[in-house]
Structure formats: structure tokens, C-alpha cells
Amino acid sequence: MPDFLSQQDWMCERFMVERTGLSVREHQHRTVANYLQLRELAPGLPWLPVVQGWTLDEYVYCVELYASAGVDLAALPRVGLGSVCRRQSTGEIGHIVATLAGLGLELHGFGVKTGGLQRYGHHLASADSMAWSYSARREPALMGCTGHKNCANCLAYATRWRARLLTTLIARGQQTELFTPPATSPGEVAA
Image 1 (tube, rainbow, N blue to C red):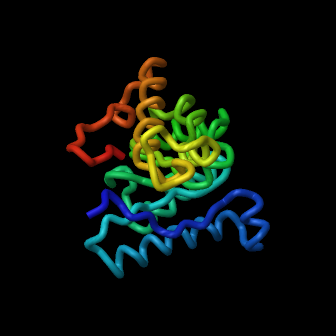
Image 2 (cartoon, rainbow, N blue to C red):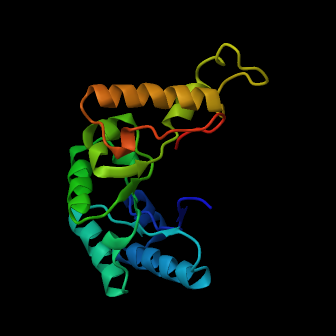
């Protein structure tokens, strides 16, 4: 069983709101409705609710939407944070992350790259990014890797990239649960 399954959330970046012709609030209402429907359809699965918005007030409004629907986000093991990746290393999103974490939310940052982790990673419970794969596509395959011209989908490359990132963050004094690698068995990679 996975740790969580992300719901479909409605992104709130300005270009996406313009594309759909809907308001940020409508995107938020659809995001919350999708989560509620998934919980009803498959209550035994670990659905990850996603908080959406663009400004701090919009994210707080989305948290309140969940609360008005009877969902206590602070009581859940993880809450996704949407509309982050295109501004992931800005001070604005850092303030939003710190504020939401201060509400007791165990946040998962979607698309948070190294710059974002350095700024506010200590407020995240987990994060994902394809930054490692972006780098791997532009470099030759690691020595010893066979069967592919680059390591864009390579477990060895991803594991080494993660180890370098963790070392950098820990050296900066940002050792938290997120950055402390869990023990793994042979052949298993820590997430």
C-alpha cells in the first residue's frame, strides 16, 4: 500500500485560471469536492487532500473549505500543497508554507526543487521533484550503468542525487525528519 494517493487538484497558477476561465475559488471548490468524492468511492485508500491557492489568504480559505466539509487537515498524516513548483524557491511561497505548517498541517510539497528545500524544506513533511531527472537527461550515463544513454529513469542516479542533496541540506543545519534518510534494505531506495 502506498503512503498516499494524490487526488486530482485544480491548479491555481494564473495561467491555469485564465485557461479554464474559472476563478481560483472555483478551482478550490472543485479540488475539495474531488477529495470528498474519492474518499466516498474508496474509503480504504490513503487519499491525500491538496490545499490549493495562490496567495496566503487563498490557501487559508482552502483549508477552511476542507474544515467546513468536515475534514480536519491537521489530523491527517499528510496534506498536499499545490501550485508551488513554478515559484518554489520564492520568499512568498516560503511564507505560505511556514504559515500552513504552523496550522499543524504535515505538508507534502509538489515539485519542490533544491532551492525550495533550502528555503523552507524544514516546514515540509515530504516533497517530490523531477529535478534529479532533469539533470540526468543532460549528462552521460553513470559509469557502470548499461542499457541506457542517460540516467533519466535510473535508480542509481536518483539515489546518488538524493544523497548529495541530503548532505547539502544537513550541512546547512536543515536536518529534519524529511532529510534524515530512513533505513533501507538491499535494493530498496528511501523515498
